[in-house]
Length: 422
Image (spheres, one colour):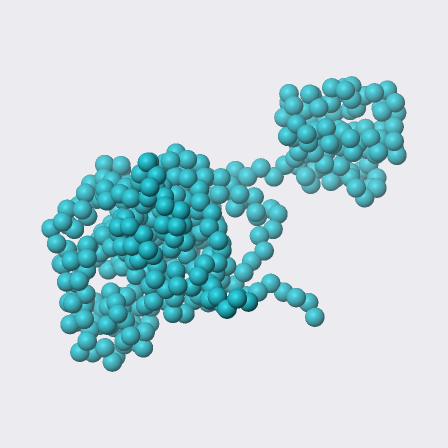
């Protein structure tokens, strides 16, 4: 019986992995420009972290986590998202004591959720995300949104839509929560079992329900905007003014709530308007989480962040027919004619690779014609031809595959010749 890849996962093969590497390099470059530092956390954490950090009323916690007991009977979970782990590390490593604040971090890595696989959505997927911890300034909200938009735009995406909303502070959220409970309670029996359990725990999550999205009470539900107190309104208006000053277009959507319990104040999503992208248009999302650090045992610390799926980003690039400038060629392919030349070519390749150039040769004892075909398949910039006779003379033939020019050079100058011309 052949063993196949688990459902909802994928092999990223040579030829495709270079696209991923290019995207990751862009992510690191833009984070450097914004002064965000990379952090790497464990792939699994204690389950309690996600129960407290993500929220026990979320679909992630209720339905999608990969949870197991290890041999020590510790209850562990493969991380379903990045923020809770970052906040745990922030608290555990006392980053709040660093002199440079806010603490600005980014991560790139695999996450795990038991979801129904579909285009751009896997059970193991890769997220790039940033977190800024330690500032209540609305300017940092705008900065985080600008970074996310800048990431997509740097890769060539144009058909983007930014949607923002405010969930307000604790006072505003409590007033909105009470209004939602009064609105839904009389007819909550008409909703799914998930929504019925959410009514008492977090009625805001009802607005995010996929099953009951078309129920008539959804359209008439109280809007959070109606319950924002003056402080929350001012904060939201400042975020909008910063985005406007940056020239970043956006839409306000009072129904945007996001799928995690820890959000307050600013929330946002970036969507693709590309034709043929699919029914699920969201590329990334994030928001402010001012109570999360306390929830996992740290001091009162504001925070904001976002996460984007690399898989969905690549789908959006495909939908907009954006071709990434990925280097697929090698610098030099060495064709050998004769046993002595073949043996000597191993040293030649080693010398080229030591100076950081890429080189390849034949390892299957193929004839010269087949070796030249291999050089074409590798898109070699130069082809070096070394025969036993040339080796005896201390020379090697070089062909520039771009210009077609050929010349014979000394073997001793082989590496410097390539260095000057590649």
